Amino acid sequence: MVRLEYSQIVRKKLKNLKNTGKGKLKVYWKWNPYGDGYQIAYSTNKYFPSSKTKRISAGVFTDSKTITGLKKGTTYYVRVRAYQKVSGEKFYGPWSNVKKI
Image 1: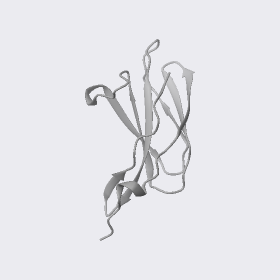
Image 2: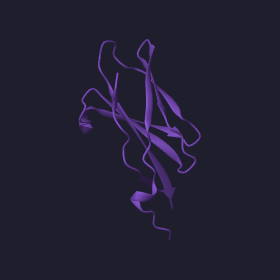
Image 3: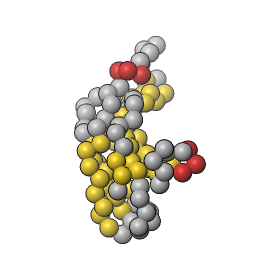
Image 4: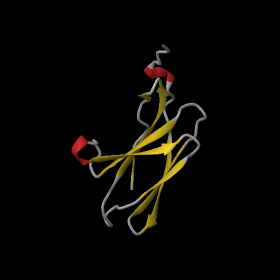
């Protein structure tokens, strides 16, 4: 069995956030060919408490994702991290920098 170390998953850089209107937000990050996908977390609280944080996934060959269903006039905080799958288990890298919009 291969054991993946936490430090082997590269920290992602959150590049940009873009308000695309009507409750939508586009998240851009620096793409990296290593890993199996990304997890994006967004919250109205800059400390990302679990009760107010939503997480969505993005595929390995993407460098952006559109988040929908957001409330107009609300400030959102966003971060992203990469993950790798080993024997059916996901191993997550560290969270990126946090940006707000």
